[in-house]
Length: 91
Image 1 (cartoon, rainbow, N blue to C red):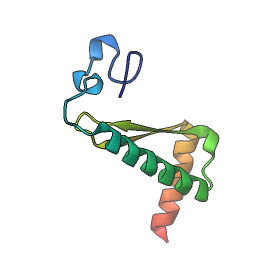
Image 2: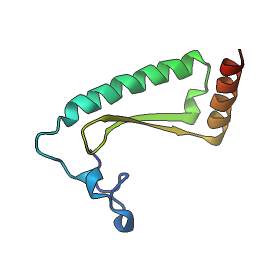
Image 3: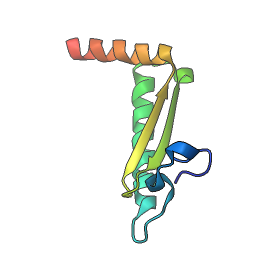
């Protein structure tokens, strides 16, 4: 889960769901799922020749235990992904 200094724990915008653990929720299964999904997305980005230095993938878990993949792109990488998506959907 997130901790001090991570998303969801920055003072004024504190999101209690981002830092609390709920008894009985299987966070590990969600994190494993997100890790696998992040790897798949990373492989797809590489296959699409997206510049890896402009991308960051992070597996995380939502408050309900579901996996979440956070994708961070530089502006150049975002434009590259947008262009490749347009080309893929046009064909």
